[in-house]
Length: 106
Length: 106
DNA sequence: AACTTGCGAAACCGAAAAGTTGCATATATA
DNA sequence: TATATATGCAACTTTTCGGTTTCGCAAGTT
Image (cartoon, rainbow over all chains, first blue to last red; front, side, top):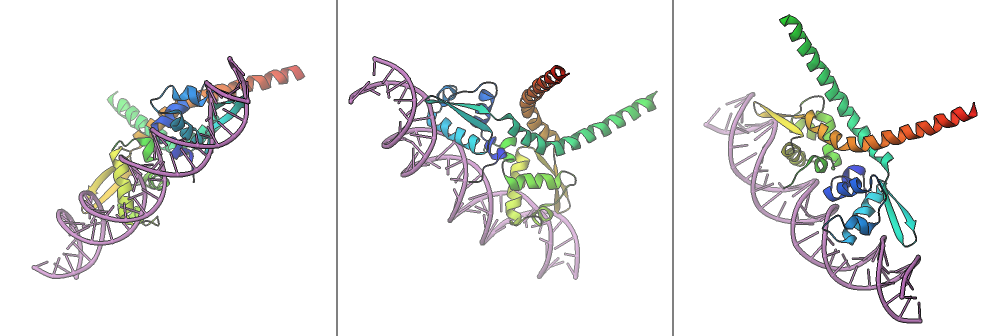
C-alpha cells in the first residue's frame, strides 16, 4: 500500500479533516461529528493520513488525539515550488512587457 | 465525474506528465515515449488533466500539442497558503525562543 | 463485576479509476 | 487514390477506493 501525500489530499473529506485538526488536536469521534459519515469512515481516513505521516496521534486514556504534522505539508510546497518559479518568471516577463509599453506611451 | 486539481495530481504518472510539459508543449506520442505505458493510457491522463483545466491543447495539423496551464497550479498554492501561515508562525515562535535563550546566555 | 464508551481492524459491497484492446477519424505522404 | 501516422473515443477488465457493518479490545464508570 504505497501511500503518498498527494494521494492523501486527493479526497475532499481528508482535506476537511486536515483543516479541522490543523489548529487543535481532536479525537475521531469529535472529528466525525463534523461530517455526515460514520466514525469508522473517519477512522479509515485518519489511518491513511497517519500512514503517510500527515497526521500524528497521541493517546490520552482511552481517547486518541489526532493532530496535523505540519512539516509534512512542506513536501507539497516543495513540489509546488518548481512551478511557482515558472509562474513568477512569467509574471516578471509580463511586467517587463507592460512597463515597456508604458515607456513607449510617454 | 467530479474532477478537481487535487485528484488530478494524485496520480504519479500525471505528475510526471505535468513536469514534462511544464516547460514545452508536447504531443501525446512524445509524452508516451517517456513512460512504460501505452499512448492510450497517457491520452486518458491528458483528458483528465484537460478536464480539470490543468492542461491546454493546441492543434497543429494532425498533431495536438499539450502544455501546462500554470495558472491552475496556483489553486493548489492557494489551498496550501493557509498551512504555510501555520508553519511560518511556528517557525517565528521557535525563532523567538532561540533568541531568548541566546540573550540569557549573554 | 457488569456496563458503557472510544477506538481500531476485518469483511464486505458498490462505485470509480486505471489500463488494455479495438475502432473511427483526420491529416499527411507515396 | 492507397497507405501511413496521429489522435480520440468507446468497450471491457482489473484494481483501488470510500463507506457500512460487525466484531473485539481496552479504559473508564456504576
